[in-house]
Amino acid sequence: SYAGGIFIIDKHAAHERLIFERLKRAYRDSIPSQRCLFPQVLSLDKGEVPIFELANPYLKRMGIVLEPFGERSHRVVSLPKWVKQEEAEYLVRELLQEFAEVPSMDGLSEKADKFLATIACHAASRGQDPVSVPEAYELLEQIVRESVPLSCPHGRSYIYFMAIKDLERIFER
Image (tube, rainbow, N blue to C red; front, side, top):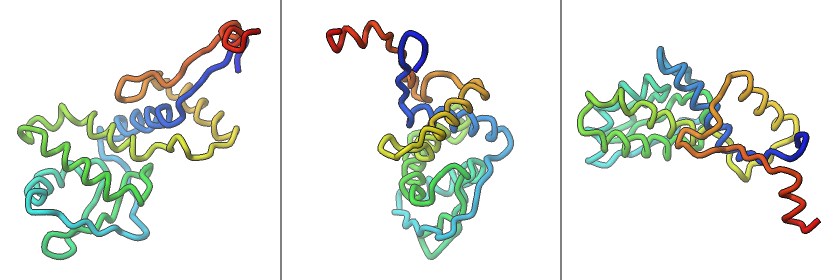
C-alpha cells in the first residue's frame, strides 16, 4: 500500500523483466550458466538437428550448453543461472522453434531480445508460486535499485496503482 491507494503487481511479469534486463547486460559477453545436477536428455527430430547445429553457438552464448548423447540426442548440461533445471527441455525446444523462424543466421543479433525474453519467461517465478512478504519487498527493491522498466519484455505493464477512492467506489463505501 501507499498513501492514497495500493499498488497491484504482477509478480511473474515483474520478475521476468528483472531477469530480462540482467540477461541483456550479461549477453554482451556471455550469460553466466550453471551445470545441471541431473542433465536432461533431449531427442531431436530430423528437422531440429540442422537448426540445432546452426543455433548451438548462440545457445552457448546464452548460457545453454548441450552435449551430444547418442545419434540425435543431447544432454542439457548447463543453463543460465536463473533458469530452473525442470524448464530445460521446454526452453530449448521453444528456442529452437524461434531460431527456425529466423530467415538466416545473419538476422540473429536482431532477434537476441526475443530469445532473451523467452529465457527470462522460463526463469521467472510463476504466478501461483508462493511468495513471502520479504521476498516481495526484495523483488521491488531490486526493480528500483536496477532501474528496471515498468513493463514486461513483451510490453505489458506489470504494476497498477488503484486509489483508495476507487476501492471505496468498488465496495460502495
